Image (spheres, rainbow, N blue to C red):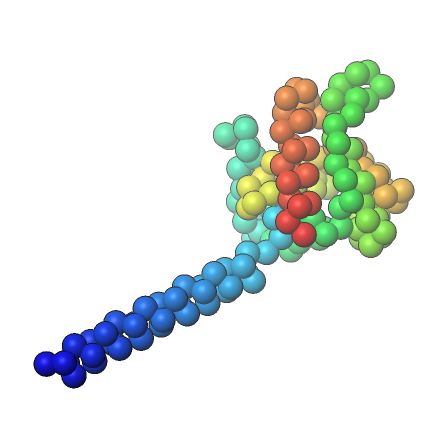
Length: 164
């Protein structure tokens, strides 16, 4: 009887250790495959195998075919803040790292007239149109933002910078 009880205690301890190892492996694997928190990707002209349909947050109805290839992520950004344009409308100012500056210049030069999707945590928040090559390391996202919407988007991007 004593041997049986001892065997059951060993078995229970072994199962607990195996479960603890399994849980830690799942956490490590999930962390490795979670990918960037912030992504900038191009919007495709039409749906394809290289794109996924995404609804722009807050619109509830605008759905865009966003290419899966990530061009810029949070490692390429230095800072984000809300500022005002010449007419006093809110805009979001993004400053890039040196590497991000080069990458962003390439993307904007090669994609004039296309839309650049800003995806945070797997959700599409904005897709501004690229009007010109942006090579100075600083970009402005402008549109019909309210002050609150601009602040919320800037805050979300800033939160992603902390996850580098």
